[in-house]
Image (cartoon, rainbow, N blue to C red; front, side):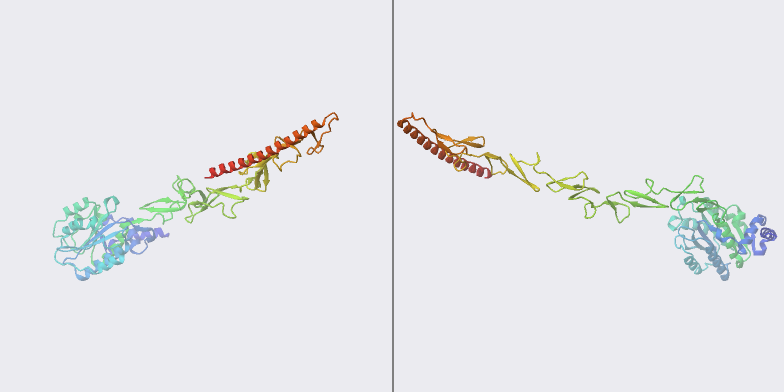
Length: 495
């Protein structure tokens, strides 16, 4: 027979009395419920697929005179085993314990412990209060002093269920129906567990609907711990992802009795809500790269434009010194320009068509020098000179006409004649210029010339020589005065 049919057959024959558990309404235990309890009580439950939802859970335990010491210890064992079945934590299930008889004592509120060991340690030190059974007062105290945000109850917008489990073996000595109704109206779900002599009518009055799911009865404290399995079933949420029945391509997220699909980092859920596609990590708004994003499977890396280098944060970029040695190919001068560079040349050179190398410039080309007359190239520089008949002025650029007929400046024997920066020679009257164009010879005269005339000619020639000599001396003096005047003017300009 298949295993499923075997379990069903066993479940159909199972009686609550076989496990010491009796429900308020025996008929309510359907085949499915009995099978579930059978699986739970005999460790056949699929624990790996079950996880309780977060709760704000308060245990209210009766320690009145009717509860013997050894029975109260059984109740504490029940509480400890209940805590073992819960997912306890600040963001999971929070637990509080209240102890009551004629008075009520909050042993620890919801905000005190968030781990199982601390809770169980605190439970082990609880002592019974004895005296009466004020169940209504205990429920009211839970509403007023425990189910508050100050004491650890989470705000209503968190939608965390508020649950009370009351364990008692007697009849309440105060009114419970109205206070229980108020608690339920405030959103508190109440489970009532009766033991031995407990009054079933009172349990039904304080428990939430439906009663067959909120009222439990055990005949002795010796079997109360078996209720932990029942409460585990009640508080359990099936992990649909662990059952293997989902169709998510990558990640299954369990949610109550359902599930939703999700994707690994670097992927996004497709419209079918099941499959995933790789995300373009370099799409605008998805990366933190300053300049260039390089997609890399499900991740990305950052790079920089040419002329920039990646900073240690692996995201931003800084301009490189493109003119650092070895980084450029300029022949002479490198000019850095925001992540790039351009080449230039030293003075006297010009940049070639390749925009990298340089050639020497013709410094005497038109427009490149400021010489008035003659430019003389000298490697990378130049000097100025003047045409014949001119001399270079002190500014080393301009020229002035030279007095070529000044003494010592010409080779004429008799007369020096200026001729636009040059000169020609001439002779006194009665003399003729020799073929060398410099010297003179006495002219041959007619025999008809008298001695008297000859004397007159010689006298005139002598006079001319004297006048010429005085004129030349005067010219020399004028040149000296002119030079002194020019020097004086230059000194005045400097001052």
